[in-house]
Every structure is written in C-alpha cells, then in structure tokens.
Length: 80
Image 1: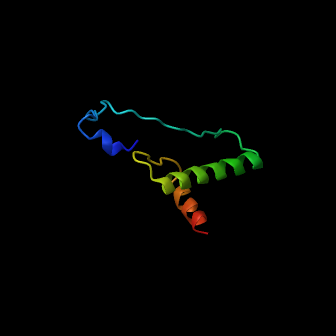
Image 2: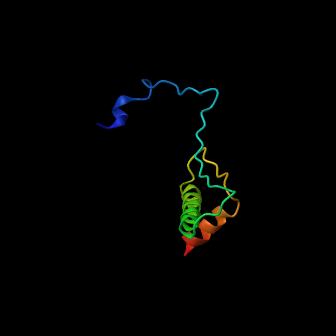
Image 3: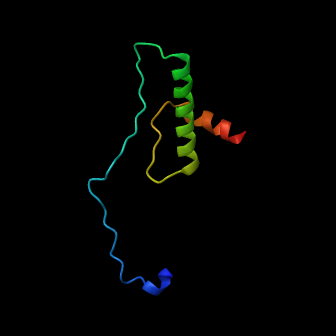
C-alpha cells in the first residue's frame, strides 16, 4: 500500500528524548604488555575499518573518538 493514502494528519509528533541516549563502543587492549604480531595486525585493521566505515556512512550522531590518525588512513585506503 502506498503511504500517500494514509495522509499526514494521523502521525504523532516526534518527541525529543531528554536526556539524550548515548551508546559507546570501545576496543581496548593491554597497555602494560605487548600484543602478538597477529593481534596487533587485527587491532590496526579493525580500527582502520571502523574509522573508514563511520566516515563513509556519516550516520547522524556518530562521532569518532579514537586515535586521531585512524580516520585519515582509512580515507586514503578507500581512495585506492
């Protein structure tokens, strides 16, 4: 069914949620012991992938708070 048939008067006004809801995703690793070469490679690729995905999709309200150099590196790789 086409939504035009429903008209606009039947929809409720959107409500502002206060306080706003936040979700934070975190990737952590131990600072006091070195990662194995495999774990370090996975960490680097995952950080680059997530930074690039967030930059590419530009979802409203999403903010990158990770390593400053991750987003530009992802941009360079995506351009290749």
